[in-house]
Image 1: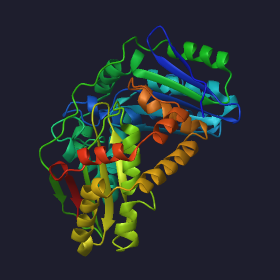
Image 2: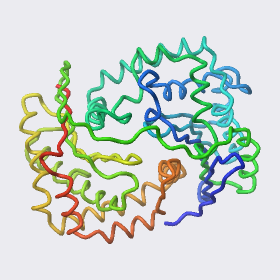
Image 3: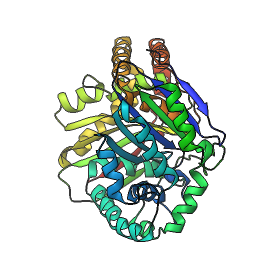
Image 4: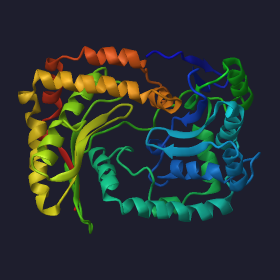
Length: 408
């Protein structure tokens, strides 16, 4: 499971990664930009997400939302974008014959959007409704609130989408200033994976993306810090109590990530994990329960999450807490081997198609981090020893390191 990677850089420092895959007839083109809510001031929180919306409202070549959408629809392609805390992405998945058009559309969106004030005023209403929609989804919101709690006091401890007030404050000129600062040179990573002609795609990238402003890969504007407040309770009329209990974990650059993958899997990564068995199967306390990990550039976390009947919340929380704190002392060699086999299989499934390949390499490369080929990571996972998992569990799962966010 080793893929041919063709990396390069244009004169303006824009980076690209091409991954030819002859066994497929499709292709994914994605533009990642190393910026997100982590680079925003408190007053402009949410501007990255607003910009993500606005590039769909028309460009120089495709001046209206309809002309842009019609162009992509005529390819029978999938077309979307996303905003995170550390990077933003725009992508088109199409038949391989349409790669030139896909790249043309993406280049227009990230280099020449219209950003008209009248479009922005209309779109603000859409985004504010999106904010309200997420507020009504406690299962998703509790994870965001956990991050806000854990990273309180740093830019990572804020909602990506912003607030109605900060969204209302965004202007067309503000969007252009933000683009000029972050949408340039080395902050761009353009990726293409699938059935491609390498010389053709290279030439197209040179043609379309050379006009991007020159610039180096820029650092984030603040450090990832852990907050001091340990608990957060949000009262909301819901059918369930949703909670996340977790600890500060490893950063994206930590060499122990394969060990953490095994640890997280044992605790709550699948249907035979400790949490699934103890919380759902043995006690019937939750429909969904499991672990989640997040690895930012310089920090991260490992957490358990569940949605439970309100009257059973205290019992479920105690079970989860005990499983975390007792894992190191009760770890069995068989659990480690079972988790490793599970992860080895998941790696194979995760890189079966072009989008999987893009996701595998993109999130790390755009941030300037090293990324293993799938077969290299598989070997690292095979090499994980029970003693290493136990040691990491002892380090992470300590009572004074626990953070808890609850919506009830």
